[in-house]
Length: 534
View 1 (cartoon, helix red, strand yellow):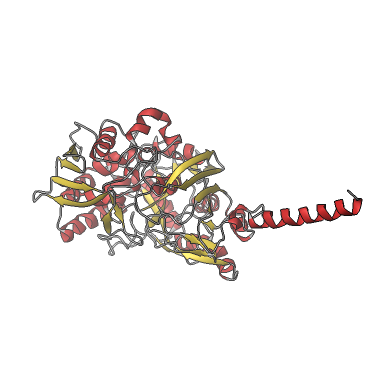
View 2 (cartoon, one colour):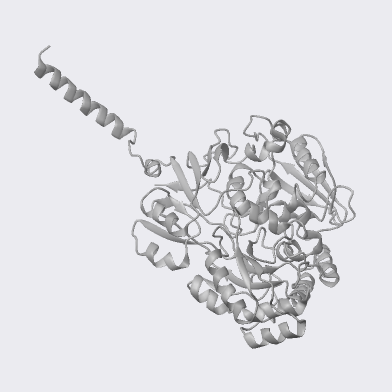
């Protein structure tokens, strides 16, 4: 064959290969491969931190639930845009007149990702697992249901199957938010087969019934889940794969969105909102507000065992300045441990005003000498209620220094931060909470009751009066009476001051303009089953 013919054939081969590569999406930008008019593809979701575990029952942090919400499903679920209750793995339910027996009729034909059947026996095994655990293993179960099997404080007495598709849950005493609690992310139903097989490693290899099944987890980098082919809701999910990409720095995450490395980003700094809105290739997305950011003081550690010192810290911090500097108008000064959107919010309470002189006066009355530098823990990841923990900690440090309180800012990797704070090891710590179910119980009891110490009550605060009020409110089914109990409890929390409530924020996300049908949920736990990339 002549050199000319060889050259012509080589050129033709190159052209054919070029066409094939183009058709296959040869771009190195994985995100851009997903932009197909026919849907499908890969959604890359940029977030501020990694998950702690992918066993929803074992964690309390939003970064873990961000993934598990798509892998597991609950008996009852929240509506797409609010906390209205809808059928989930249970298609209907009945409540006895005395409020002690709940009978759930289950969906039929549902499979776990490992191919095993979802049925009443599987539900019972999940509840048995939780009931036979403890606060260290299942902290949310304690917070939401009072305790474990046989304990005097336990809400749930027993869970039994009645045939293949009916589950009966019997309570020890009525619990007004029981159904809302069941709809929360921690109570996703896991494959009993997988739980038994994996044991303590189940959080590394989760198996549920959700729209996506687990693929892989590269620690501090990414979690990948893919479309579950046998998902029981036909036509869902719309995308083939979701990659949760950890990018701790807010600016780097936004830049990754602008350059096409990711499709959707959470934790957008309020200061970057105008930049997103000015970019025709992007869209700014506001999550409905259901959160509170706060500075907690561990009351079992000196000097915070003295109420006057805690009140002094409240007077010392310029909350208006924090809102102005770090939230760019996308937040309001917090007054109570729960946001105004929650029924039972006490509107009569005002935030502690910024009054350094009053703070100094209280510190003097308490005999505080300021000789020891206290640890002020700064969150290592951005969260909806805390856009930049380090900078907010620095501002608070200056406020405290002005009244004679010396502090040293420290931080830890996110999972370690939460673990150590839960053990009461912090003097002061920045944290916050996004409501799981829209109920006051999920804020006040979960975060500040004595029965939540060791799970979500990081301040170790306990008060016999608030404890009585919160337990009474759990049993009270009359909404007006419940609200009055919660309002009284908020008055005590305000006076006892285990927190400095800082902000009720409007969390910001940003996505490519090609993202369609994404509905950020007020609870912060988003399901990506309907999302499309056009």
